[in-house]
Image (tube, rainbow, N blue to C red):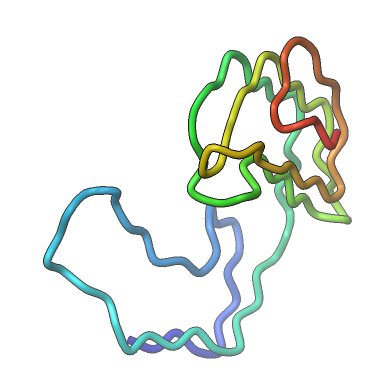
Length: 110
């Protein structure tokens, strides 16, 4: 499959290959995403993450990677406990602002 020289506008997601967390004999291979432009016009604000507990598949369990043109605002973290491989996970924030309260693991980056 080739996705080449395209511009995505008004999309929920850009380029991605969606997978499910269940056993499968299916596969995806020989994929090329090339010369892709994605307009960043979505403004995210006033979102609450409350009473979330679990295990992350990656070391960075909380990631807010927001647009510099449309930063995320009003993000609220409350009582979040996430681990990674029985260790304390990490949080990463870019162009995101908000508040946090209660128990937080990983430590809030907001």
